Image (cartoon, rainbow, N blue to C red; front, side):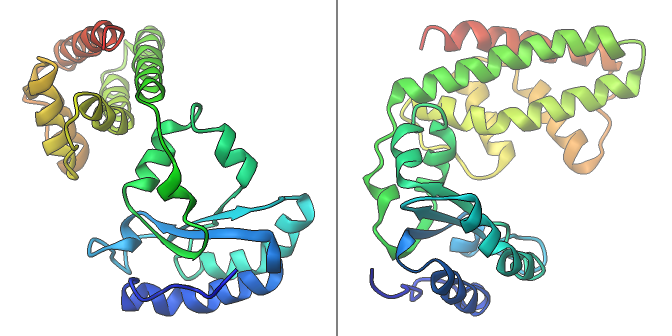
Length: 246
C-alpha cells in the first residue's frame, strides 16, 4: 500500500502522529485502505494546547476484533491530543454520502491524505444532498426551539442558553447554505453569520448578539431575553421557508 506521506504535516503534529500511525499500520496491516488527517491539524490554525488531532481511517473490513485491537493505541493517543480516529469501511464511504454530506464535505475541504488511496479527493458530494441536510437541520431546529420554549419558557436563563446552543449548532448549516449559493464560506463564525444574513435577508444583529453572548458572555444587546428569543425564532422560521425553495 506504500509509505506514510507526512511531508506536508506540521512539525508538531508530525512528531505526535508518526509513531501512532506506524503502530496503527502494524496492527491492521493490509486491511487499511487510506489514512487521512483532517481539521485544524492540517494547517496553521493548529494549537498544541487547544486543538485535537483528527484522523479518518478507511478499512476494507471493520469488525469488533479490529476495534478491540486498537484500544490500547487509541487510549495512548488520546493522552497526546490524538482523538479516537473515525474508522469507516470503503462500503460505508460509498453508501453514506447522501446521509452525511456535510461531514464528508467539511473533511474534503480541509484534509491531507497520509497513506494509501486518496478517497476524499474522489468524493463528489451532490448539491441536493447538501440542501436536504440543511432543510432537515433548520426545520428540526425550529421544532425543537418551539418545544423547548414550552418546557423552559418561565426561566429566563434557560431561554438564553437555548438560543446560544441552538445557534452554535446551526453554524455548520449556515456554512453550507452559502455553498448552495456558490459562495465559499468564511472560516470565522462572525463572518459566517454576517454573510448568511446578507444572502438570505436575515436580521444580522440578532445572530451576532447571540454569538457574542456565547463567546464573550456579553448581555444580548441589553434586551429582554424573550424579546430576543422572538426575534431569533423569526429568523429560523424565515430560513425554514427559504431553504425549501433553494
